[in-house]
Length: 110
Length: 114
Image (cartoon, rainbow over all chains, first blue to last red; front, side, top):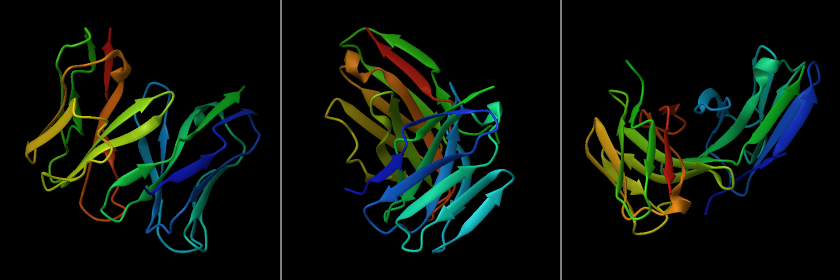
C-alpha cells in the first residue's frame, strides 16, 4: 500500500540551531501536507504543497516539494522552544484519504 | 464552529468490555477520518468516510473494530470486545471533500484497557 517514510524519527537540537525533516514516498503524490502536533495535543495543519518543485515559507519554516513529487522537506531556521513537537508529512491518497508519515519528534534545548 | 468534537476525552475500561467513541465533524465537511496513535505505530488511519460512506477501511485492525457514520454530523468507532493492546489515543478528523483539503482534528480520546 501507499507509504510515506519520514526521517529522522527524533531530533534534538540546541535552541538557535537549524532543523530539517525529510519525507519520501514510494509513489508520486498528488500533494503533500505538513502537520505539527504539540506534546499532548492533536495534529494541526501547517501547509500544503501541490506543484512540482514548489517552495513555501512561513516565517522561519521552509517547505519544499520535490521535482518528481515523491519527496518533501521541512526546514526550520534558528529553532525556538516553541517549535517543540512532532512534525508529520501527509501524502494525499488517490481516494482522498490522508496517509501520515511516522513523524519527526523535535526537542529543543534552551 | 466549535471544531471537531470527540467524546469521551478519556476512557478506562476493562478487557472484554465494549467501547464506543464518538465524533461530531465540522459542519459542511464531507470527509471524516478515524486515526489511532501509539508510540510504537504512530498515527494509523483506521477508516475514511466520504459523504457518510466508508471509502477505505483497510486500516481497521480486525473484526472487533467497527465504524459507522449514520449521518453527516455524527460518527462512532466501536471496539467489542476491547483488549489491552487497543490502548491508544483515537483521533477523529474531518475535511472538505477534495484532494489536499486541510484536515481538522478533534482533541482525541485516550483509551486505556486494563
